[in-house]
Image (cartoon, rainbow, N blue to C red):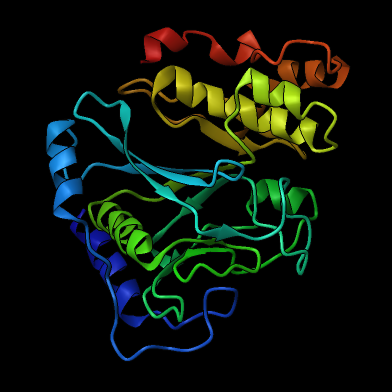
Length: 284
């Protein structure tokens, strides 16, 4: 854990500013962000150790970014919700460089993603394109969450909000979390919202995202994710003492559900496939 902390600290202190929507010039002082006393008090009240892992979820239509944190019982609880000041584009995934779309999907923030020298106060790269995006031929670079309330393909927060979000990510990484899951959705994935957008051409993609969303909702733990030949694959999180599933196992477990996606119509219920939730209650 000490090695992981040193690695993240080195990134914060030595990484060069990168190009993209959240960069363009260095500031004189390296910034680290800060967690408010109110948020630290919430952690204590909700039995969330300060060094516990976190997860970030974004909902475009509602304009919200959520930070979830692991409780002592291993499940994740909602710590804070922050208003998104602005995101670029409209509902739907990012397809190509220059389309000014903010990504949707399942990403990971690691120590190399942090940019303490952003001209937009603070920033971190969400990891686009991920393995799924690359399989789909999607292109784009330096897609960020940053301060400044201006966006060209990114999620822009207020400086105040970004100050705390960045610090929460930095603290989790320095405490030994290998990467912070970042889940970006077009809207809250309720059946009513899915039905309301049923005619949208992105619906097949959104239905894949919903399966991952619903595993988290059912288990209060991040799903295991893989890119499966142009599809997202999801399985429940590993039980205590159980090794993580490899990409091949995840893709095999979701193959039956994937075949079902191709046959369903907008009239069919958007309830997740039961194949993805086997023994999920036991995993909680």
